[in-house]
Length: 403
Length: 77
Image 1 (cartoon, rainbow over the protein chains, first blue to last red):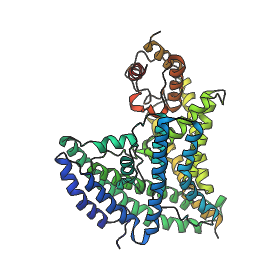
Image 2 (cartoon, each protein chain N blue to C red; image 1 turned 60 degrees about the vertical axis):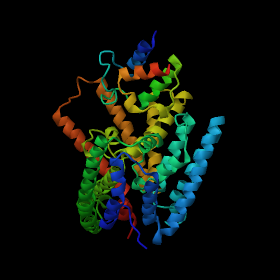
Image 3 (cartoon, each protein chain N blue to C red; image 1 turned 45 degrees about the horizontal axis):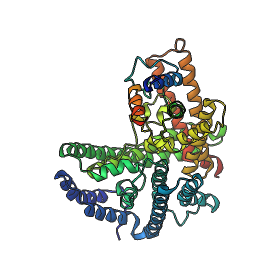
Image 4 (tube, one colour; image 1 turned 30 degrees about the vertical axis):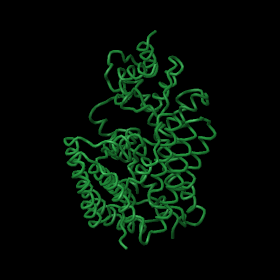
């Protein structure tokens, strides 16, 4: 049986084009066929999770039923009562499968958990977000069918972008005007073609051609201070370029496909290499993930800490929460020393960044600000980020701890 | 004090600068507000005006200028 990585090869795109055509004609004439959308969703889900990967498919089905039961159950409960402990319990239950999947390799010698499947993280983010907005009372009309469509929306199921329930629902329940939809098609097609350039040319060059060569060179040049050498530096840049073009390329496919289906899935990248500081970097890199962390972890923790007066100054509150927030992000990537160090690195970087911004604001007259300092800030930020990606890559683990 | 004055005084406290001269300037773009500042704003609105805004109601694009914040608070008060 056929089986594909989403957006993995030309056949996938050919099938996508054929499947989307009737849907696009429908949208142009102001019609959305739920039945047809559901059918092609199921078709592409089977392509991704069927055939040799059928165990993942089963895991996905069980997981979805479990999350539907939790979110639906909580929505029903929330209409009557609003107890804190019940809410926390439900959130813990909702992230339990993901936690098991993330912890299993660390305790079972790298073996993957049986309940895992491609995209479980991204589905967990969506489910937890739905639950939190239900708690807040901002999401009042939870609907099982909409929730299922939201969770199983095939263009974004494997790696995001992470949409929000209410935003998705708004697009899903309406049909864009013909004028607007024509604009969306234009954008969608452009995104997909830029995606081709990113993923199949640039990411291929950096990731498949350059990286392995640099890796071999770096392994041969071990022995110096911390086994560092010029090839390690080269690897850091090649890996960063690969990570960016691969993920930004995938995200462009996902957003482009969504647009063709009349859904304005949010963008994931906004020229991240132009960021003048780390704080701004997180407004431009993997945006839907960092905003998810901002809205559902950072702001909520800060709110809770301030309300309960946990720390004396707002500054301490902000700093402690930065570290927690980024550590959680690190753990989410996986329970290895390099992911956790990566999280800690970014937490500390945000603390330092904030302190610098405060200093700059206070000493506005004495801190120079011109084109040169601006360029220097961008250069410094990009290099700090690339260094953090070197940690993230796990290559230092290979460099230091393998024979 | 009316809503407008109260909101402006909260914003002045939070940002450390007088925003009443730039009512349509984006507070996030200029770096005057960030996530931390937003939460402080929500807490102050709660204690000074009794307006309850849950964090998930805080859609940044709807709260990014002094004028928008005032309009939002007035609609919720």
